[in-house]
Image (cartoon, rainbow, N blue to C red):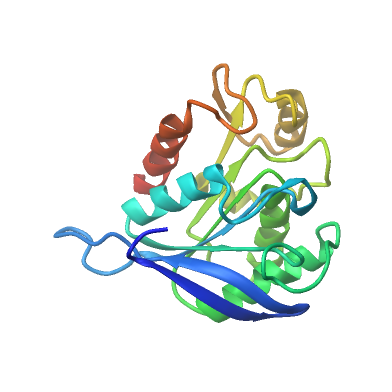
Length: 213
């Protein structure tokens, strides 16, 4: 957290959703926020929270590129009400955050690990009715959950990043998910699931994607 981070308590389908909003970094070239990015955290039953370092790294990348970044705790995590629901209720949590903090205007969605799984289904749920400008999936949990395919029109707006040596979600499972879609995967050489020692590189990859037209 920093001076531009705002604590929030939102209304969710299971009760209160605890959230943090980081203000966009503005400059001479970016005078107003580009939009709102909502970032989903890893598995609630294995220590995943909105304070996860990969989630924070993605938030910093969005902020640097002029986006307002929103992180939140899924149901049953931190001060968020409810209990773990295997992704079903968590999808509703994410949709509730979008409805309250980004009801209109440019929207970006991002997730790490379990959060990528939930984000993929959020993209699928919103795509027909809402423009999603940028999609960032990191450590996509394709070996553990039924990750939704991304709409064909979403591919150019998306980046999928995975560590070569991820021992939590094998790279092969992500390739098996991406292959039928012909969806490119950016592989970080020697990278693990949590990108220890490589968070600056991860941030740079996300920034590069967000900066592309």
